[in-house]
Structures are given as C-alpha cells and as structure tokens.
Image (tube, rainbow, N blue to C red; front, side, top):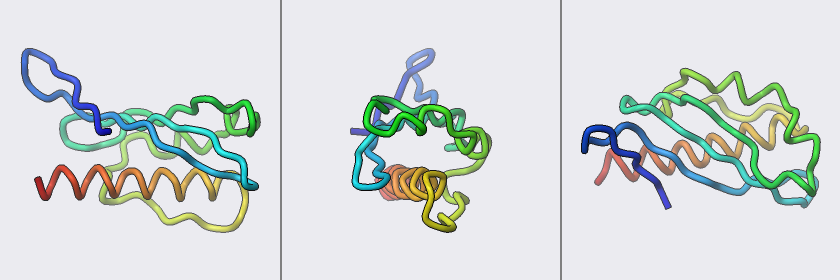
Length: 100
C-alpha cells in the first residue's frame, strides 16, 4: 500500500512500508517522500531479528534523492541489502504514480 498524506486537501508526498532481508532474516523499512518524489526519510521498523539494521548509517544517504535516481546495491552486506530494498520500493512507487 502506498500512502499519500494530504496537506490542505492536496497530496503532500508518499510513504510506503516494505520488507528488507539480510541473512535470511526479515525487517521492515518506511520510505517517505515529498511532492516531487524526493526522499525525506528512510526509517527502520521491526528490526528485532536484524538489530544492526536499526543503527545503520546508510539511511541518511537516501535523503534528498529522487526515486528515479536511487543507487544500485554494491556488495553483500547489510547496507547493500538495505539499498536494494529501498531501490526496489522506490522504483515501485515511482512507476505506480507516474503510470497512474
């Protein structure tokens, strides 16, 4: 589900909660954007099975990026798993909203 918050009865951005996986353990992330589909935040949720995901510095690197300009994941570590999940979710939101 893609959430579209309203401000003055107009769309103010988007938000989506989506799964990520690291070492076959799932956790969730919340991606929020502004009206221009630039990321305002990526926040970890329910990281009980991957506790180090709550402390990753990679989340700040997404801030200000447009959904259609997200980087590809590099490597195999936790940051790569987070980057891949954010790229996948960002692409989903971008395609769904741009193609109606």
